Amino acid sequence: MIPGDDLLRLDHVTVRLGGREILTDVSFGIGPGQFTGLIGPNGAGKTTLLKVILGLQPVTSGAVLLDGAPRPARDASIGYVPQKLGLEPDVPLRVRDVVSLGLDGHKFGLRLPSRARRELVSDMLTAVGAQRYADARIGELSGGEQQRVMIAHALISRPRLLLLDEPLANLDISSEQGIVSVLARLARAERVAVLLSAHDMNPLVPVMDRIVYVAAGRVAVGDTEEVVQPGVLSRLYGQHVDVIRVHGRILVVAAPEGVDEAEAAAEDAGVVR
Amino acid sequence: MHYVFEPGFFTSGPVHVALALGTVIAVTSAVVGVFTVTRGQSFAGHSLADIATTGGSGAFLIGVNQFWGYLAFGAGAAAFMEMIGIQRRRGRDVATGVVLGAALGLAALFLYLGTQYSTTTGASFSILFGSIFVITSSTVPALVASALLALATVVALARVLLLTSLSPDIAAARGVPVRAVGAAYLMALAVSVALSAVIIGAVLSTALLIGPAATALRLARSPVKAVLTAAGIGVLAIWLGIVLAYDSFYWPPAGRGWPVSFFVVTLIVVGYLAASLRRSDRPAREDNESIDAEQACSPA
Image (cartoon, rainbow over all chains, first blue to last red; front, side):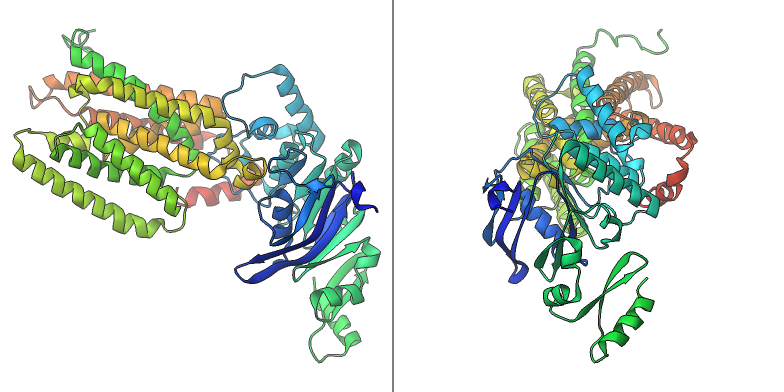
């Protein structure tokens, strides 16, 4: 792909924090409407990478380009769903208030209620399947319900790129599938590019167009078949890893030192999950 | 009628001032308070009140109106807290023990020295527990102006504060100057604490700030309704407190009215408890029972 066609492009991004390199020479692009999985173990640098794209984390070197130009300080074309809200049930925000803040929560002063806004919020809640609890307080909802609401919050301002930080972490299987299908549907229908971080790629394999695999601060980019291979991932991790495919699931496991590869694969297949 | 409003209530000048000023300050405190509770900064409010006590005592010692002492120390403390980031969770314990203890110790010294050098009786009492019936008329314009300023700040920042409460990262990504907004809010909080210190006393000022807000957050679901409910509760508590304090002049010991602060704070607590009872009547959502129970157990 020609770099100019990318909605988002990271160009040789390196981030150093307190003498430690969190991200090393990361380059990749995301095209309009693409569904990209940002996959990697905990602590690999996924959240830092998302914060770099959001402009919350300054880069040590390299550039973040939106439509080929440096990312502006204030940009409505990126929507963001953070990992965890951690709100008390006392916080006086109903689900519909949260979604409404997605339109103009960054503005000063008061606003008058309007029917058009109410309908827009209501439509958005229906689109993510959260209409049922529109009047509940956000702090009273389960993790999966909160994720749906935050997706609606992020999408109501019609961004072209949606970033989600571990939206599937700590969800039960049915909520997990619900969120993935909502995202896949909206990405197609609204032509929103989605970049979603996860430590387990399996729920995303059916919907991912591309994978950005992060390990030890470096990335490998391509489609799942290209990237999720022992050779590529071993180079990324800097140690030998095996990729095991069982019952349509993909497991990435480290081979213990001094153990024969095949043996290690067999052992780990039994241990992991 | 006479059983509720004792003779002279409606013709008393100090009562008029108390009612009018009480209303303005109760509304300001309640509205600011909703955001204090929402942002989890009740602790900051309490610290500001302790430090304002020192300021009020110091002002008394050097013969300046106490309000300026409350305001100067409160605003100074707010700036300091913002600078070292103490309004956030970490580091609170140490600050509570050391700094706030020292502030109240200093207040004790100032009050002791002040009462030695002046013949003003009851100064200690009015600094610690308020003096709504003896407001110096020359400070009224400054009090009202400060209240309106704090109120205007919070109203202007309302949406941004809510977005920041939802997620500081989202707010920052959307271009909100999160740090500056937090600092502006903390200043409004300091002003509001200074104001309620004038009417119900420095040590009790957080009651007017947190009480109506916490009660309203249990009763109203949306932000707008929570703010209006809090303001209503605050005003009601002040009005009833003033009426009861006036009436108490005829209660034992006859001829010595009870302090307004006592009534206001008691009414606020009763209101909060009533709201809590009402709330626990409501059945918990089945899918969230465990979460609710967990949060109910953890200290607020």
